[in-house]
Image (tube, rainbow, N blue to C red):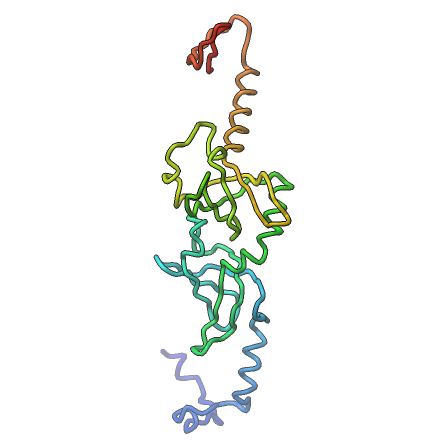
Length: 233
């Protein structure tokens, strides 16, 4: 408290302006707004940019793109990604920088759709494992949301074993491999079975690599034929 006594008051401080709420400097309000705006990201409508998730609840996700206001996106647009969390970087499509209420309008669904076709083609070319959300059952298989595109998952490509009840997969997020694309009709076919087969093939190689002559192992009888018995190791 002793040091406070040595502080001299500012001689030209305008107390009347301070009490009335007027500007205390020679800088105009317009200049201050311009200076503030210059610190913000420059964005345009119908543009796809990256943003950061800063808040979430059961219905909405709040995303910051470095603009003067944050955008609110329905959580349903992220249902393909159940692991979404605060701090994650997500791509968003700027629908409107400022609506009637001054709110920034963003869409994650449209951002994914804008870049989806390039991504799905790259996934096929690179044999990439991707995540998809099983939306519904359809004739002969399932409809899967991958990068915002509705892809077809044939019933024969769900598992290595025959599947009788497709409904148990609806609403699940699973891993897939793009196996076919019809460029003309923009049709995409994915497979979950291909991933299982690849994993089984890897296990098979590991088991065969460890087999030795005279080694005793336990196995399961898978099939009996006139010419022998098939054993699963």
